[in-house]
Amino acid sequence: MMTGEEVSALLARAAAGEQVAWDALVDGFANLLWAVARAHRLDDADCADAVQTAWLRLLENVDRITEPERLGAWLSTTVRRECLRLIRRSGREYVSDAEAFADIPEPRQPEMDARLLADERDAELWTVFDRIPDRCRRLLRVLMADPAPSYQEVSAALDMPIGSIGPTRQRCLERLRRYAVANDLLSMDTMGGATS
Image (cartoon, rainbow, N blue to C red; front, side, top):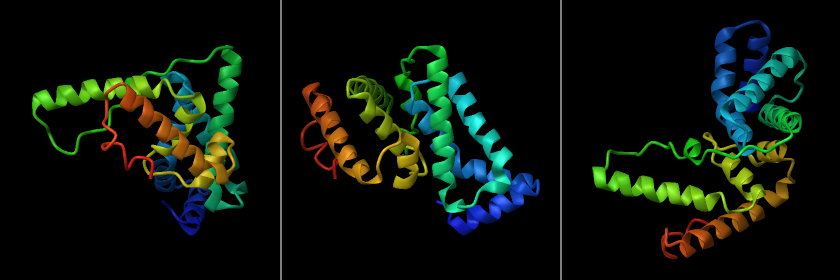
């Protein structure tokens, strides 16, 4: 996570046209913005449009950002509003592609059988994930962004009070755990620490 001073310095350099500063801002916030867009269950093209619109709005307003420490929240809100505009324009809600969120690389190369079993388990887990309420799916997807967003950024991205994020996360993970256990994907012991 960048500090407010670091973001402020990057914004000043970006306003002066320095490409390296823009690249650093994109590197610092791109994962968060994509997580917010994907949380709205848009297809890849619409997600890309929403994220690109946020960067365009920043370009248009780079010299007007008065609270650089809140840039992540500002960008998240911009993406969220653009996603909602795209959904209203299309008049429908998109079904998400569970595999788009299951491409987290393995820390080491497991045996082929183990990989197949893990892929099968992950696919089933994403199926279970799709059964939890939409609000839970959105929250957990945003919280999965790397680097992890601050609660202030999550609040802005999902239009949710900061004080309700932790308790809602806890309830969502508990519901996901119960569904996974009911589907024999995980034992009670395996998921015991997932809600802490």
